[in-house]
Amino acid sequence: MRQTGKGQRSGRNRGAGTFAERVIAFNQSLSLDATLPDGIRVMNPFREDDFALTASSEFYRKYYNDNNPRHFILGINPGRFGGGLTGVPFTDPKRLRDRCGIDAYHGPDAHEPSSVFVYEVIRRYGGEEAFYRDFYINSISPLGFTAPGKRGGEVNCNYYDRRDLADAVTPFMVDSLRRQIDFGIDTRTGICLGLGKNARFIEKLNATHQFFGAIFPLKHPRYIIQYKSKSLDAYADKYVATLRSVAAAG
Figure (cartoon, rainbow, N blue to C red):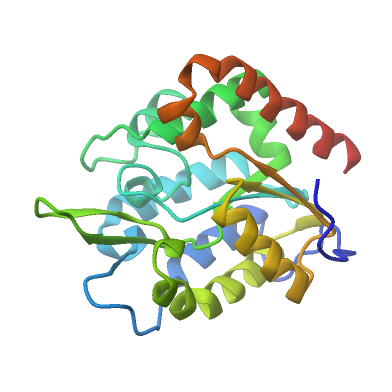
């Protein structure tokens, strides 16, 4: 755990409605007003088609239809085959349908490796209801980015892959984080997915803005699936132990 801020706020919320309605309103309003580097495109599933907003709204009303405080888990930015399609972070169409029981998504089917690991962690934690009762998961940039691929088409682009992109979207990320904290986030502890560039960026922001009292960084799910799949059980158990420790402290 890295102590990087004060984070005295705990479970505060503003605005009418439930935690779910605040998330849905946030998703509906998401837009990025910034000059991006040439070739970089913003992925905003909530404006690009009707599937993501409909399906994600059903998801949040199923699992967040209350005013309970949650702990924040922060990834990097949505990918093309998970949250970039479904509107639910780290949740690809298969997991949204088979694990969450949400059938409102009728877009293209896809498989995201990070989603596989996250839902294995959720299973070990006690299932979707237990996990989403305690945690809210999104990314430091709630909108994703693509760049031109070497063989044509588009590929995922992380905000930190280019300094000019990170600089351009930092105000958006800070504002988005502040707005989400007001959903009813317990800010004594935040969890960061990614031990390298994402952790360093979030810790730097936290030192300036004091969003959280402490930050727990964990290996990113994509890295685990891609490079450490033989050790998946050990990583999943470490995730669960960290999550339970954070939830118990809250």
